Length: 171
Image (cartoon, rainbow, N blue to C red; front, side, top):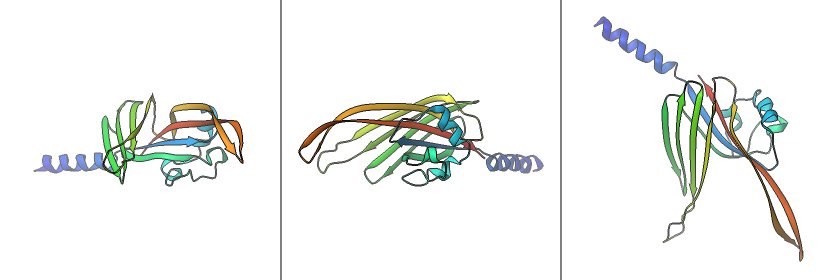
């Protein structure tokens, strides 16, 4: 009986001290650098700044970011999650091994009446992640040009944006 109680207490203490993995995909409408993002992220909590459609923070370098995806998961071994809200779906798969993490997030959206039409985007990262402050797992800079017509005038407009996968392990 004493062994059973000890085993139950051990299991409870392990569950109470379990770590949490916060993941977010944030897009910025301008080019960002890893170094400057890391400095700005050192002063924030990832779950708090991604609790809306836009990044909510007093850190000026992080303002104006569009939160594409944010989720909290148990930070242990292999993890997977699938979430569906309305016509949007997010599938997360990953693995934490020591301080290494690999994660794949697939976002699917859109359903047309009668015919199902999905657009799907996949974000992947392999990086090191230690408990504490948020870290950049992956950063992708995208530049493009598009024709824009304003009042009958056509012009080529250059667009830049930055897509970032951010992770944080906390207790």
